[in-house]
Length: 234
Image (cartoon, rainbow, N blue to C red; front, side, top):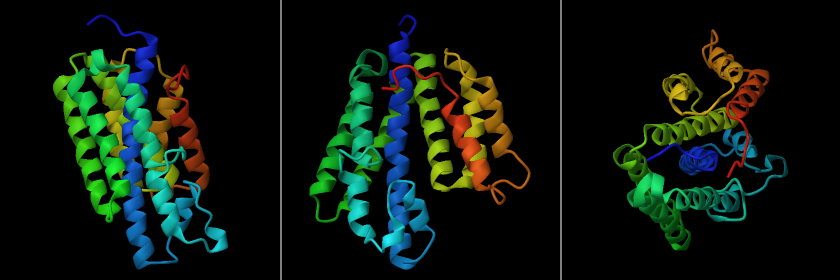
């Protein structure tokens, strides 16, 4: 396969980001749901605020959880993210292969089935399995090293963004930054080295993540957003 067009570069990066957005948001929501059952006044309320939940008016979180999973019109929802991933995957069939595309389609179908299920959270396990299978296919079936690293960089940047935004699994940010450092020079596109260096500086700062202030959270989100030039952002 020849060099990738700028359009396909964008689609590959955002395929990775949307798949990871679906996967990590789903994991966070299930975690927050369990927290809500065990600790009704816990930190999950503030965390859900990053997804649009208004914790100040005594709102019932259960409808919000369902909306965050299955409302395809909600840009923060699992369903929206997986549908966007599929839109990117369709135009990349010649790059990622039919096997990878099939697992993205299966994840979309599994979300639809979970929405109709009497036990939606249990049924969401199938979505998780489909996404994990897709991630395995990325290594197995994408022949281009550049394309593989673009998708995987999308995974990593999205995980870092969500972990930071939701203040969720902050202890994993250093590991994710290490992964990104191993790939970012192999993706074949320009990136903002100053933003990358700032990202590394913040996650490896002394005392991280215990002293991760709101100010530093904002700085890290800004650095992550600046890593790659904004083109189509499919």
